Image (cartoon, rainbow, N blue to C red):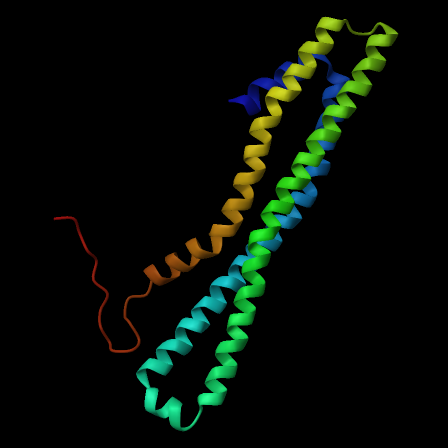
Length: 189
């Protein structure tokens, strides 16, 4: 609701400054969008490396004698490489959302500073009153909290989207490959 109400109030109060705010909002949104794409990719790679690690562990458990006899070194190297990849992408998927949050915080500070400077200039020229300056400033502060939550939720969604996609892929499998066992759908009793 704040996304609709406050921009309408801001446009009504000072259309020139509202356009300036929208421009800066989209300037902040561009790097956040880029970072969320990187978060999604890092999360996909983390999930893929987790799948590969699980696959290697299952191979080792199912063929423990074969692994011990013939390919212990190759198993160790493959698992080690997947663990390195997992670690690298897990760190990326944890750091990048924080970077996105920091960019939005910094952008918010720049926007607030710009509002103060531009509104002070308008106040000095007599284009607005002190009351409208405070009201506009209050409206900018009121809209910024939902914007920050929105940016943070985009980052979190980008982090979890690959897992959601993978669960949907697994849900569409009708037969388990390893034994021809049909998938059963469990219903509440």
